[in-house]
Amino acid sequence: MRFLDQATIKVKAGRGGNGCLSFRREKYVPKGGPDGGNGGHGGSVILQGNRGLLTLADFSHATLFSAEHGGNGRGKKQHGKQGEDAVIEVPCGTSVYDKESGSLLADIVEHHEQVCVALGGRGGRGNAHFANSIRKTPRFSEKGEPGQERGLQLELHLIADIGLLGVPNVGKSSLLAAISNAHPKIGSYPFTTLTPNLGVLETEERRVTVADLPGLVEKAHDDVGLGLRFLRHISRTKILLYVVDISLPTPEEVVEQWRTVQQECHTYDSALGNRPSVVVANKFDAAPSATHVQKVLDAFDGLEQPALTVSAWTGYGLADLSEALVSLAAQYTQTPASPGHRPDATKAGAGTLRHHAHEAEAVSIEPCPEGYRVRHHYLERIVQRYDFEQDEAVFRFNKLLKKHKVEEKLRENGAVPGETIMIGDVSFAFQPEGSYTPDAKG
Image (tube, rainbow, N blue to C red; front, side, top):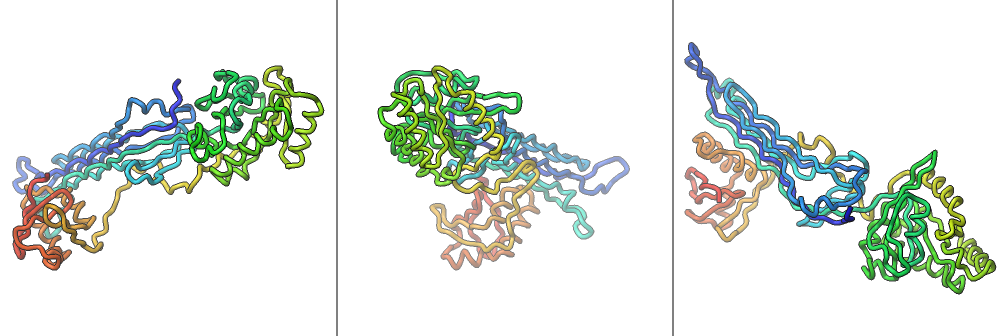
């Protein structure tokens, strides 16, 4: 399967169904009351974590995801059907960003964790809803609200118990193949590994996931080499395994490999300095001498950094390494957060929640190419819901304009009779002291 750790998609929630304008008409019931049902809410778009997925490759072709529209209300107080939510499965470790603003919307870490990324439109109310002891025959119903639409940028931060880190060509892929069930591409040249490889180390007690991450070079935090594409995947790794080449001519060169990788990790994310770590000195079979090996181990002891010697080629030390990794994985089970704060995302069931615009919000007026635009979330929402072919909708609209003193604010901002006024995507001509009938939507 092709590994892909970035994807751009568009999500579109369902529109709410229209409310019904209807009156009871039955034999022997000459004056039946209003019986128009409400429209159903539109379905929401929900992202759900799935630990069985390891790549965003599925989104390289399917990029548009839509939820179902709500059903329209009908007579006899029959309410419209609720739109089905669209549930999109993504790998655990996926960060979700708003494509337009770049803000972090969600961080999906757990299996079956759900986040609503586009809320379905609210269904319109039928005229039966507006009947009361005073207004017994309301000739008014609402249209359904449109669902939210947005572009999303998905970024995968690979989740693994153990992450193999090191400069290119130190034998990380060989080590992964030797201790797990993985079959990575192996070669004796830099950057053999261009994408992360996952393996599983299984014992009777535990199943440990091990990730071989692409080779790291100096200034990777400035996007040199494979740069940030590599560093992104370190953030969720629970235990860091620094792999160095013990066959280098001097102990100082071996230690310097570790320092280079550690410095790049810490520069990218300072929290990595507190992550549990082990040094694995690979290529023991090619070490210059036993004295050289001892000097390397002594150097790491002096730095208070645990170090083990192994040979992925001959199998030397691999049993001890596997035992140490299983023991560490049992101690550290919590998945670390990615760099930056974890957002307060809307969880499962968000399709039943609705946005409520506050009527008490102050009205603001802005000049625009058409004339003037009225900014007020409640009014902008109302013009989407009113059916202006209904006389009562026009009446209610004019009452709202008067209540919020829209005419006064328009005059204060220089509007003159006949100028075009915009509220949301609805326009009407400015008619002081007159009745406003909005034009058709553009």
